[in-house]
Length: 137
Image 1 (cartoon, rainbow, N blue to C red):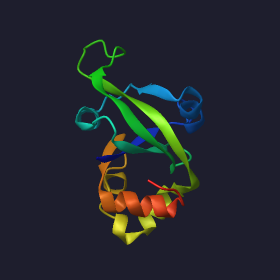
Image 2 (cartoon, rainbow, N blue to C red; image 1 turned 30 degrees about the horizontal axis):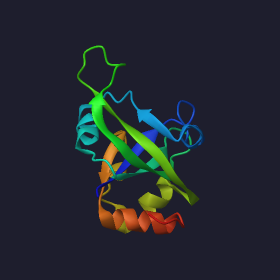
Image 3 (cartoon, rainbow, N blue to C red; image 1 turned 45 degrees about the vertical axis):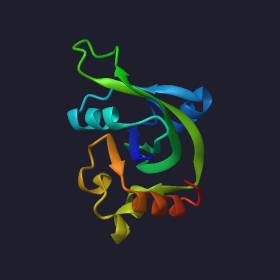
Image 4 (tube, rainbow, N blue to C red; image 1 turned 120 degrees about the horizontal axis):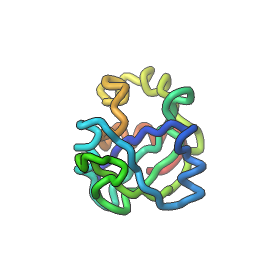
């Protein structure tokens, strides 16, 4: 199993929206590196659900339930999307400030490449962030 972080603007698609719909498409990604990350995802992988913009915090965990397929909102046909299912919320959201303050997380792409909307998370970082959020991975 691989681990990921997926960012969403809560005003566009929030954790509450994801929970309400259960399984939903993760579409609209238009960054080439983020799209490559979507293509690398496998069914059963897990991802942190990150509220970007004003909140800047990890609020839940989703599971990849359908691997990459063409995103119909891309008229050029270059980009893909995946389907994700809400698994569980964080008992305590983990903020970007908390992540940046933790030296063991200094190499996370969330810290080093703050604009990347879909990024891999290594197993040690995954475990640490889950512990910070008081939730199981």
